[in-house]
Length: 120
Image 1 (cartoon, rainbow, N blue to C red):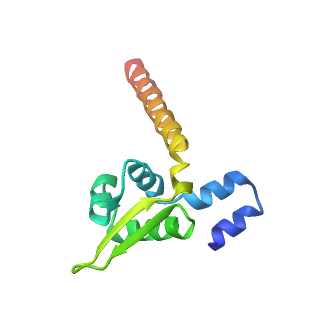
Image 2: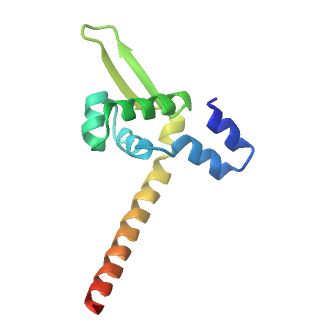
Image 3: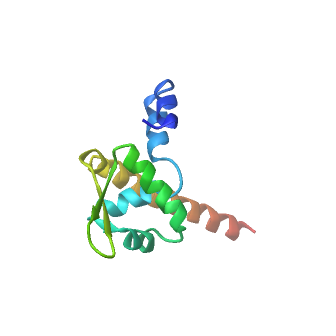
């Protein structure tokens, strides 16, 4: 178990969730892996402007926390694929809810910005 997760266990379950899923690009990675298995380059293109180093770190942490499985095929060049574990797939409803909430939040903020602009 990674140290941040172990420390979060002493606080509360919400902190455990943040320790596992918080950080750069992790939820986006989970979101795309919910659709299917991806290779590294596919994930990088899907997620967006993430550096290879940052994506690698996120994938390693998700793997260490039991969310992602990394499969290396003995080919030349080696082929590496990432998929969600059963625990990772259980995040589907959470990711769906967060996506809906994010869309609603963005709309609310756009409306507030529009209203503020009209008032000027």
